[in-house]
Length: 209
Image 1 (cartoon, rainbow, N blue to C red):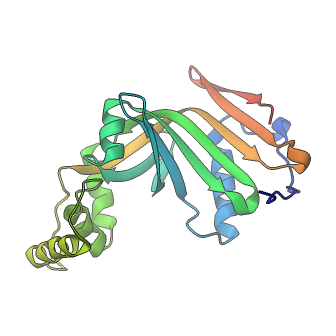
Image 2 (spheres, rainbow, N blue to C red):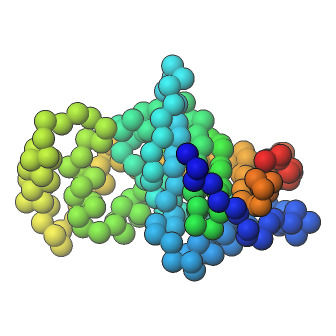
């Protein structure tokens, strides 16, 4: 398919990189937000079943910091089960409008229950009810069954009352081993700069495009 185009954005100068990936990630994310792109915190989470079968889905990054990149999900969903059995995980931030990608590879760890509870209470009422209503990744008979389940829970926990955190729901923090920053350049000579954890420090290496 003849759908290629030239990438003409400014490249990455490794001599000006910070010693750790988080400041650069924070700057790139701020530039995505400033560009008014839709869902700037959307990321593709890739996991693998114990038999090696991979799977991917898009989720929203909710927190990030020195302890990792955090998202929340149903622990009994496909990704929840896979990450519990095999915590190796990859995250992809596909910021195509800026000809950029960030790829994080590392290990998923469940966040403490108190952190999950604090985030859950900050969610809109409908999202809290929805977390209870959906047996994520399971087969359901119809949309009507899902909406009936939601209505039953809405009646049980009216808006303005406490909606408890489902015991099967919570956060994962992805602790990175590598963080790669990809910037599209002319003639497919893209910039790929990868931070790789070495003990308590980070090494930076340029990858061939």
